[in-house]
Image 1 (cartoon, one colour):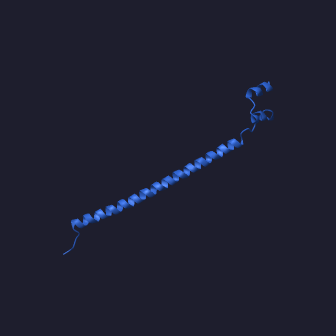
Image 2 (tube, helix red, strand yellow):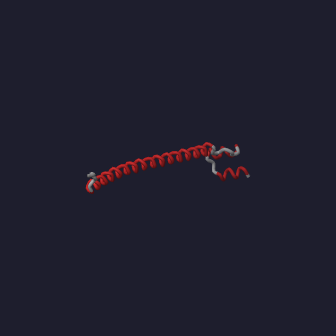
Image 3 (cartoon, helix red, strand yellow):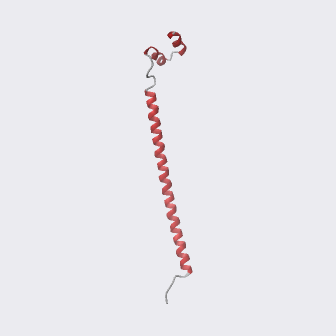
Length: 88
């Protein structure tokens, strides 16, 4: 006479397996969400760093290419109308 599992034992085993599977899936989902958040933060930091680089580059090169005769007016804050009148 062979011994087999009863219906109650199969249902109990299935329920335990379902709980274990749900817990494992929950841990995986939290871990995956953490990894996605970390990647987004890294991308954001990289974008900010790039933006700061380009802004700093633009600020450093501000005023480059001005004629020496009129460059001083911009630094002194002279009205632009006075510059035009003096050039004419």
